[in-house]
Amino acid sequence: MSEENNKRSKLLREIPSTSKIVDDPRCEALIQNYGRTNVTTVVRESLDALREEVLNGQDKSEKLEDLIGSVELKLRSQQTTLKSVVNATGVILHTNLGRAPLSKETTQAMNNINEGYSNLEYNLTTGGRGSRFDHLGTLLRRLTGAEDALILNNNAGAVLTTLAAICAGGEVIISRGQLVEIGGGFRIPDVMSQSGCILREVGTTNRTRASDYLEAMGPDTKALMRVHPSNFSIEGFTEEASLTDIVKAAETNDLPVIDDIGSGSLIDSSQFGLTHEPLLSECIKDGADLVLASGDKLIGGPQSGIILGRADLIARIRKHPLTRALRPDKGTIAGLIETLKHYEREEATTAIPIWQMISADTESLSARASEYVNAWKGNAAVMPHKSTIGGGSLPGQTLQTICCGLQLPQNQLDETVRTLRNLDTPIISVINDGRLLLDPRTVLPSQDHIVISGLRQVSQLIHP
Ligand SMILES: *Cc1c(COP(=O)(O)O)cnc(C)c1O
Image 1 (cartoon, helix red, strand yellow):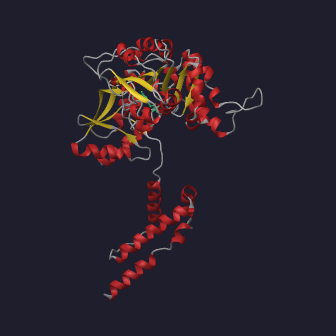
Image 2 (tube, rainbow, N blue to C red):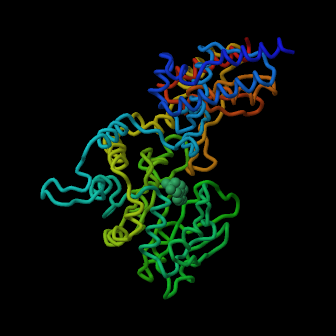
Image 3 (cartoon, rainbow, N blue to C red):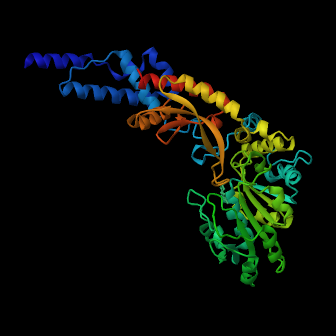
C-alpha cells in the first residue's frame, strides 16, 4: 500500500507546473496565436485532468512535448469560429455555406476599401457630405434601364423597407400562390405585418388571374406585389398572372407594382440549359415600379439587397428610417460595384465564380473528378450526377455533372463524410445512393489540391 502511495506521489510530483509549460519556448507560437490567458487556462485544465487521473489510480505520466501537443489540439478545437470550407456538394448557391463565392476583383476591391478611408459619404467635387447610396446608382441604371437604384444589407431587408416606406397602413395585394417562406423563417406574410401593411390574398394556390387583382383593389390598396416562388414549383393545372398583366391591372388605379424577384439575374440563364430566371432589365421594361433582388444569388456578388425602379418611390424608401438601419457597409458597396462591372464588360461567365461553375464543361469536370478518384486509395469511380443551383434560385433545375464517387461499406459512409468535414479545411460532401459524392463543379479550381490531399489523408485512415 505504501509502495503504491509512493508511486502516486512520485507521479504527482513529476507533473510540471502550469507556468513551466506556459514559459516553455515551444508554447511561444501558441501564445502568439491564441493569447497568454487562453493558453494558461488550457494548460491548467490539462494538468488538472492529468492529476485527477493519477489520483484515480492510473499510472500516467506525460512528456512535456505530448502535453504541449494536446494543449495545441485543444486550443485549435476551441476555434469554432467562421472558417473556409470546400463545397463539394454540387449546390452552387449553398445558403449554409455562404452563397456566392466572389471574384478576385471583387474581393480585392472590398479589401482596398476596407483597409483605409474612402469617399463613402464624402463628395470629392464639393468637399461636402455625400451619400453612400450614390456610388452604385449610375452602374445599376446602365445595366438595368431603371430610373434609380438603392442598395441595402440584403433582400429580406429590401422587401421589409420597401413595404414599410410605400405601403404601411394600407393593403398590399398578392397571389396566394406566392405567399412563400424563403428559408431561415423569412415568410412573406410575416414581413408584411412587420412592415405595417395588410396582406390581401387573391386567387388560389395554383391559379391567380389578372381579374383577381382587379376585383381586390380598393381605396386602401397601396400596391400590387409579385413574389418569385424561389424554392418550389407548382406543377399541373396552374396559372399565374404575368407581370405585364399585373402592371395593367395596377394602372387602372394608378398603383405601383412591387416585384420581389428573389434571385434575379443579369444574364440569361437559359443559355446554360436552365429555365429563364427573370432578368432585372426585363422586369423594369415590363413595367414593375420597384424590382427587388439579392446581390448574392445569381448576381454572384456580396450579400446585399438591390432595389431598382421609379425615382420618386426610391426617394421615399431612402428617407425611411429602416434604410438607415439596413444600410450596406462600404466593403459591400465596393464589392458589388466590381461584380457589376464584370457584367458591363460581358465577362460574367469567365470572371464570376458562380457563372464559371454554371457554365463549366463536362470535359473539365470529368478531368477534375478523375484527379479526385486517383487520390483515393480504395474503391472510387467517376460518375455522372446532377448539380443544383440552390439558394432559392431555379427550384428543381439541375445541371448534368461529373462527380467523384467513393464506394464504401454502409457503416463507413457517414464516418467518411464526417472525417472529410473535420479536416483542417473542411470538405463538405454528400451521400447519394450508397456512395459518397464529391462534385468538382462547386469546388473552386484553386481548392482542388485541398480535395486531393484531403482524400489521400482520409483514405489512409480508412484503408490503412
Ligand atoms: C432569397 C429571397 C429573399 C431574401 O433575400 P436575402 O438576400 O436572402 O435576404 C426574398 N425574397 C425572395 C423571393 C427570395 O428568393
